[in-house]
Length: 511
Image 1 (cartoon, rainbow, N blue to C red):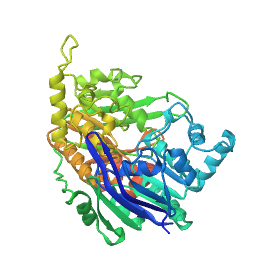
Image 2 (image 1 turned 180 degrees about the horizontal axis):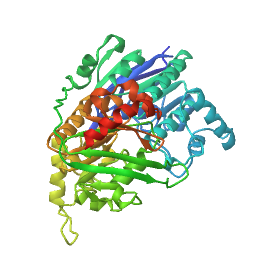
Image 3 (image 1 turned 120 degrees about the vertical axis):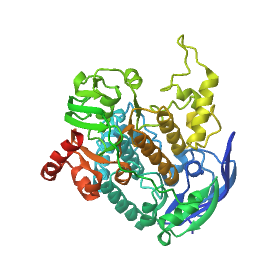
Image 4 (image 1 turned 60 degrees about the vertical axis):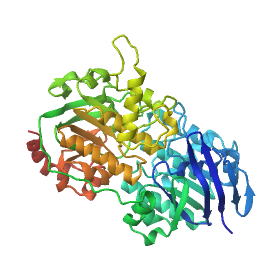
């Protein structure tokens, strides 16, 4: 008997048909991948299984019986849990309170808090139940979502990009957990753009393209190249990585020290590094080790730093606002797409005005045709799948919205681009496109600082690497001299012994 069977499921929106007569069959204890490029209809399909979206037509069977799942509460009652790519957490509540909301009231909050600690510990997912969600990084929020799903003892677990901001060590721990759940009879629907993960973890793979099923394969018998061809119709282009031609120092950080803004934050201690024109510098680290605080200090969201501790083209900017920093050529892409990178309810055209104000007159009038033309240019240049400039940001898939936000800042030809998690939840084709654009910006003489928990990404695009741990930054190391294992060690703060060997070389490179 099948655990889940979908037959001819369809869902249409005003501008797009998200799913077109999709059929899907999942066995008990099977880890089943759903693969497709951004906008292929994967998330919409998962939301219909979870009851968050109602299908227009088609049938669904659960353990052989026809069902209509009208809302997530009914899905959870059946034993279906889901971890969304865009998190469904209340920022003002603690992690424990968010988990408690998704459970029945047979357990009190204190009991749930203790249970969270037990589940998180047994699965190697570090979660502080008492922390307010608004103080958590994207990676920490993802861990809360995963623990919340595991707390319900699901019979079908839906994971939408679960490892997008987890460290390699945490991914391996999660895989052990998922294999254990599958061995206990839990079925898992696994959405990921990381082809290596799908080949290593999943038993079966259904491929979607343009809302339709285009193939079913055994991923263990496929290569990354063959899976890419099934997903996007071609292999992703190889990046052209030229020798760096270093120019002036664009960003100089010296002795940056900031106390945390709240009890759950991370103090920054004596942070020092440079980023030069014509290079990409990467910062690796486990979520919650000071990345948020550093990005806030660099972008101007936190203007408490000593003015001289952050210099942009040799001008002190530590106390300047984000607007003044943008006027001097610093553009910033935050890790949170919805809410910070874009306003969900505003159109793409209106969202360009968050950082691109050339179409606003001195008297404050918005030249709407120019704004719409800019949005259309970004859609075309960065191959964003959207209904047009007036499409609301929330109507785009996560990957397409990411392409639009990154494109909005790159199109401005920044002198320094600071970007956090550039390809989070983005398919292989779109990820290759974004990384290629970062390299183009660097080759044109721009300076780029990338913060990412994707080590493969950092090794692919960066000229030099730093690691942040417990609010401290390691010495720089040329990417060509680093290894994934070494950077993994440094992410635990263990660079003191080996770092000394590179410290002098890093200073020489920055001189």
